[in-house]
Image 1 (cartoon, rainbow over the protein chains, first blue to last red):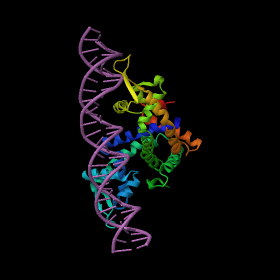
Image 2 (cartoon, protein in one colour):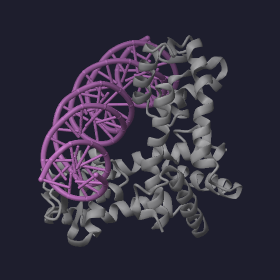
Image 3 (cartoon, rainbow over the protein chains, first blue to last red):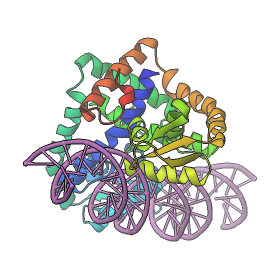
Image 4 (cartoon, protein in one colour):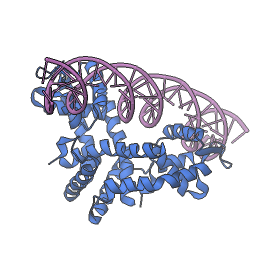
Length: 150
Length: 150
DNA sequence: GCAGGATGGTTGTAGCTACAACCATTACGA
DNA sequence: TCGTAATGGTTGTAGCTACAACCATCCTGC
């Protein structure tokens, strides 16, 4: 019971903390940040919408709306995929690359402050195992989140 | 890194799983369920708005909107606090009590399925300690969540 | 070579949350 | 005892997400 009550509280509170730091410092949602981060790590900073949705644990409609807004802000751009006329590619613009480079340190610091630094090394290992088990039951087929699969 | 990526994925995915089970089976949000659960455990099934907001890890405006909607549905009722004219009390109605009694088993089962049952007893203990540490840094003054304080 | 389904993606909209502004009541200090 | 601040709560609104509906392209079997 204690474990569940606390986990529920973390589920409720932590996203708000992350969001408000990013909104304050970079006018970004935590989810938007994640989108940029995944793009920035991809070859040519480009990813198909479906792949990006998987990596960011989101549905396609959600991603589509978010990318549209980021596109309006000049942070990403979309173009049709040459190999598959159905598909759309999303690519980080130069401005987007600058943005995430500038934003990352502050965000990483926030994550360290509230999660990593308050745990012992053993606890971090434990957390990886625990969240891994939960993810496997929440998303058994691995439809989402190819990333967290070891 | 692995621990954080997975935790972020849990933060993104688990609420959706809980929400959709409750919406499907009871037309309730996970947060609304939590509100009803806290009321049902309180003396006289009544709590002041501020206390209820604390126990549910939410801001007062959010709670106010939610309670208004629950009131419209006949699940809770509000009445001014006799001792402090500023304060408002929220109380579970008979219908609300029936509702949560009917809903709890299914919700508990979902939580077991996705969290409790996929972990070993040691991992559950570890999870309580880990989330406890995170909560303490996210909410150092204990402004919220009196509940999870041991 | 084409019918039917699967895949990839967008759009419309209802509903919830965050934030700021606001009002009423109570507590406190000089 | 009165002015000021703190407390308790509500409301308005902008913005994001979920869900459903929709369209276009690709694949498969026959």
